[in-house]
Image (tube, rainbow, N blue to C red; front, top):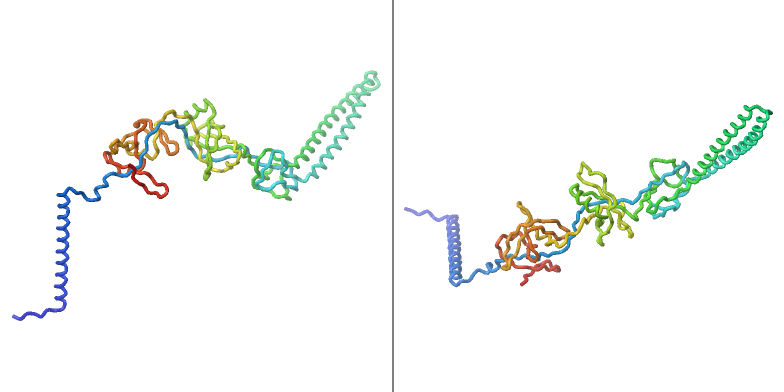
Length: 399
C-alpha cells in the first residue's frame, strides 16, 4: 500500500501538538516542585512570610470622665434688631439725598430733604388767617363786654347781648381751628426734612434725587437696618420644648452662633424670645437670641450654625465620637482587652458635642476603645495599635 505524501499543513499541526505537550509537562513540574517546597516548610516548622501579619492595625482611645455641656443645635438666620422703611409724610420734589447706599447712619442724621417752599407758603397763609381771626375775636369780646351792662340797664335787648356772646364763641372756635392749621402747616414743613430714627446701615436707595415723591407711598425711599445689637432667629423641635422651658425658667440661656465660613471664636448671645405657639406644619418652636455684635460679624440675612447650651452634665463618661458604631440592634464599640483582642460592647449613647460622645451605659472610665479600623474587626480578633502621622497621612506601629 502506498503512503500519502505529507502535506505542509500536517507538519505545522504536529508541531503545535508537540508544543502544547511541552507546556503541560513544564506546568506539572512546577506544581510538583511547589508541593515539595511546601512539605519541606511543614516538616521544618517554618510558616509563609505573609502569615506573620495576623493582627489588625487600629487606632484606639481611652474613655475619660469630664463635664459636658448639654446642647441642642440648629441652623438659624440673622435678622436686624430693628428695620425701618423710610417714607415721606409729604408729597413733593426730592431735592437732597444726604447719604450713599450702604452708609452707616446715626439716629438723627439727615437723610432726605423735600422742596420746602410750598409748605413754607402754606404756613404763612395759615398764620395770616390766624391773625385775622384773632383780631376779630378781640373785637367781638370788646363788643360783648359793652353789651352785657347795657342789657342789664335796658339800653339794649337781651337778644343783642346773647348774639354778641355767640360771636365771641364762634370766633374763638375759628381761632382754635386756625391754630391747628398753623401747627399742621408747620409739621408739614418740618417733614420736608427726613432724619434717621435709628442707628444702623442704609440699604438700596429706591428713589433718586429729583423725583417727585408721594406721601405715605407703598415703597420706602430706603430701609435702615440696626445691626448693633442684632438678632438670630432659629427653630427647635417641639420635643425640646419641655427642657427648654425648664431651663429658661431658671434663667437666661446662652447661645453660640457661628456664621458660615467664619473661623473665629463663636459669638455668644442670650435667648430673648420664645414663640407663643408651636408651628403645627413643621412641629418646631421659634426662638430668637440677641447678640451685642460689636465687630459687626453677624449681618442680616446670614445663615449661622446655632448651639443652645441648656445645662452641663457633670462627670460624664466620654469617648471620641468615631468609636461609636451603629448596628441593627443599637450602638456599640469595640473594646480592647489587655491581650489586645477586641470584644463587641453594646453601649447606650447619650448625646454628642463636637467630636466627643457621652456614653450613658456600657463603658467605664479608663477602658480602651477602637476609634479607627473597625471595618476589619470581629469579636476575638487580635489588634495592634497604630499612630497617625499627620504630615504624611501614613500610620506606623506603636509598641
